[in-house]
Figure 1 (cartoon, helix red, strand yellow):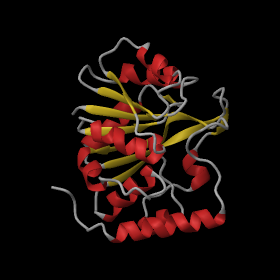
Figure 2: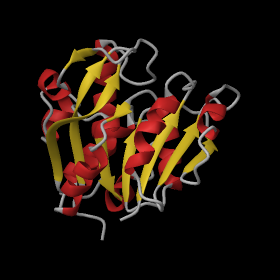
Figure 3: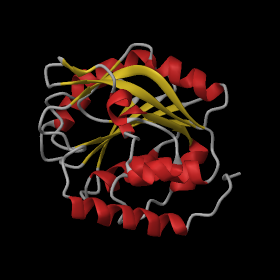
Length: 234
């Protein structure tokens, strides 16, 4: 199965080379890393193109925020399996093999655990799952999202079921996970940290939000999910 790693970037030059370097040794020669850069006038492009590797594909993003950027990059993906990827993490050497083993055994979407670190990769928490109570319950994840894109991979069928992504959904990973669960796809959790997830104060995702904003996001998610029919994409 061909793998597409989909990476949405924005001013990512500080860490992105380290991230890509942790990914490429795990991929086959026909796989791809799609980097969609929402700040192409910056230095991210130079960092990405420093890799003389045909699997690394740089594109300019739509400039409409992180959710739209991931959606745009996913539309370019040619793989049978899509791995979502942030610009500033580090993948463990066995991430791809362990996630692919789960998918080859029947999973349609995989969420794995992560070690949460600071900018210098010092451990803040050894388990994101333990802190956030990650689960694959539809109702619980509407109330409190426990899916993070940098720890997700899914089949092209799951991607097709969640696309086109509504313009007003708050986060791409939340939407994809809830659609997959609602439509009856096999959503599995791997209780093993397979990335070091950097939280360094300048992250594009994962910032704090007000209580009112959280309520608005959930109402938006519910309104959009009402339009999603049950049943897998065939």
